[in-house]
Amino acid sequence: MIINHPLLGPRDASEFTYLGDASLINRPDWQSDTAAAEFHDYVYLRENPAGTHRELWFHEQGDRSWLVVTRDTLTHEILATELARDVARKTGRGK
Image (cartoon, rainbow, N blue to C red):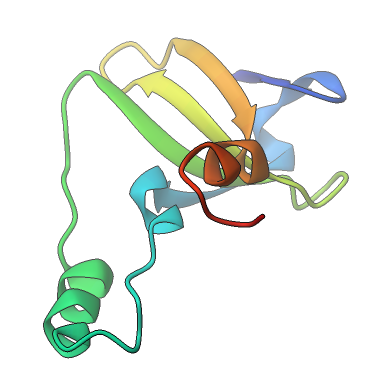
């Protein structure tokens, strides 16, 4: 599988480590009143969708960047790749 890195261009998937659902970027506030329940869900509850899914990938064998890859889990077709920092900034995290 080829991942089109936003900065480096097409790279083989073997250069990357898959790290799960991209919603992990939205870490709960540890100071909230419901932090324990929110962190339980954050750590242990995951979706396993069939179809389009946003995933976190780490470019371990390259520039060590984090990517959000939108991929069809049925066909493995990659629909989009973005730097995770850009995705976090769009949601108000990682100023």
